[in-house]
Image 1: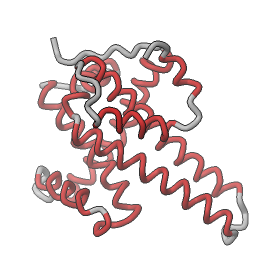
Image 2: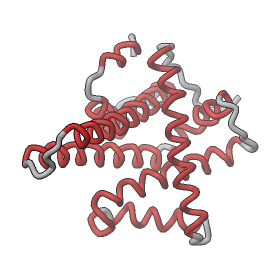
Image 3: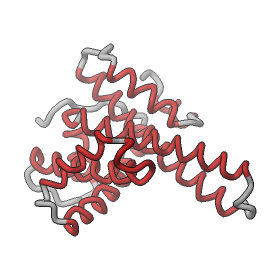
Length: 203
């Protein structure tokens, strides 16, 4: 990306995030550095979309007094669909590309003075928690039957916690916190500093 600061002019991060996701999965780029850059920018755009759609819904609900108005339902349903889509793409991005984020996530949490011990082990735990929180958000929208693959993935992840509901719920809370922290890190690196150089491995 020749001018990363142009991302600050984006009005709909959801569209950009979905477009980047499609490019990543088309395997057009073979160079590791370009794939890493695109994946992290895609994550940032999808996270910004989730934040913006969530805020839009909350503001609109507060602003409109007549909740029975058909226009109100139409707007909320449209935003819900866009929010759901963004969660789906982000969960798929994390699930299928953990190696694309491994170094950057550890770097982000080290800079934020988060306690990390074994980086390679903990990067997987961090990203699993992040994926869990997204899957739970996805399943809240349409339930288990409509999105079977996410229900199956949820069951796989639950086994890591010996099906302990309390421990699993804490993983959801951690995942939300990790998403927020990683988004802030990428906002600073990409949107404020204009830095889109991402390293492919630990050194």
